[in-house]
Length: 374
Image (cartoon, rainbow, N blue to C red):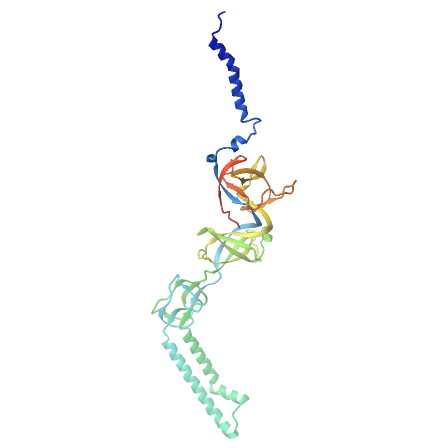
């Protein structure tokens, strides 16, 4: 057998050391497979962008979601209460008006004549009364009083003449048609020169400030909706601008076909709500006072246990929680069943976006989002 050359013998001697060094290097970062230091000490340039929101302390409002149609508390067709020719139209569709504002004027000449005629009839009746009473006063030396004076007034037609004059003056006042309440003109039905008759349609006026909604509420939800509760109203015209209203009444009848009752909601218009619109409505059904609340989107599960990621020193840390009631926007955090401690406090930042695949203690860059509350 030929002796092995020296370089090959040196390589064989070094080979175990090389293999041992590789094995040692491989096991140094993992140990028992749970070393999070290597991941946790990643440079800041590898921090993941996420969104977070603050934990808050307050009331959790549980709600019932439904729909309804918006209606105006006051919508009316204004009619003429006298007859005459239109001389002036003072408003246009879409114009806002106040209560008592003039809308349409009629020719007052005929009505002025009617007033003067009624005044003449009253003067004639007064003269006739004087003729009937003065002779008796001269004979007796005393003015007529009591029943005798009243009988003389009736015989002279004084009462009838006074009523006729009041009616003529009222007709003249009605020559100017005014707004019965503040609102917005929807339609004008007359034009200058048109001859109006009593009872004819003149205009349509709508109140856009005082609005109401009759919202359908399923019969099993009716006991949870209370008069005075808050109602959040949202429409397709402004989905990001909910309007706050109040439950004014729970109406008595339940529809036997739909098994739904009705909640009457009053809301003030904000310029986007219009009568006839359909609205999505969130009714306050119950209020849990003074709770620790996290955004509902912050709660996820790992290994069947609910948790949130709390950001501390730029790192997202698993924090197991005991969740309570939720309204879909916020979730109550209850004390731990064993320690009695709530693991999050108001002001903590919990992740609501970008956290579904994070590991414990992962470095993150947080943008704080403003969570919508009911």
